[in-house]
Image 1: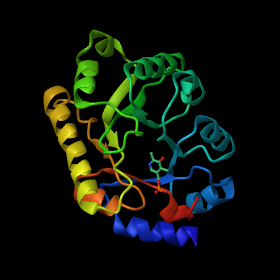
Image 2 (image 1 turned 120 degrees about the vertical axis):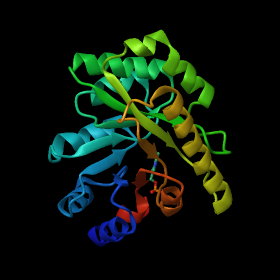
Image 3 (image 1 turned 60 degrees about the vertical axis):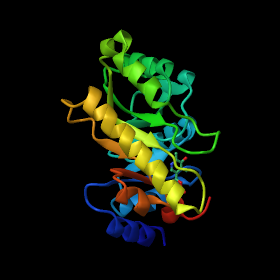
Length: 219
Ligand SMILES: *Cc1c(COP(=O)(O)O)cnc(C)c1O
């Protein structure tokens, strides 16, 4: 039962950690089951799919974009997205700022970091993030707000390397916080942990876990 899965996971998560129910590929009926059990934060990795679900579902849902975002698609989600987890380039952040302005909004974003051993994952390095944050162009962006960091660990059974990767993201977060965001209370989120590793991620300081298959079943 989906709603039972949700309850079990909620029970295992401390109250300061936000649960993002990752609903990609799942039908609206499944999302509604989770919604009716009280869940209001949903994560999708494709823009079109998120927009289609947004259109038909209740309007008190917070939609999080967790997958790689192409600049030419930002305009579709800018009217309603609550948080973009996957900012991995300056160009993308510029476009989000531009589309947010058009919609008279400030869009919350996380900087995505490459923490996994695997080559395929998107994300910034700490140096790239520092450059971005220090740039004059960034200081002029009034319609985006950086509220933290996001990362994906390697897909492996080796808990120690996963733990190391989570620790490296926590360290990046702390460095950025101290250097650039010490006066900004809103910079507080560390989005890490999925179905297989969210408890480990919470041990290492996660404030936001993205859980899909443990709620909705395998994809
Ligand atoms: C699919 C996905 C998840 C959820 O994965 P599960 O293993 O099903 O919990 C989390 N984060 C991102 C970025 C994803 O693409």
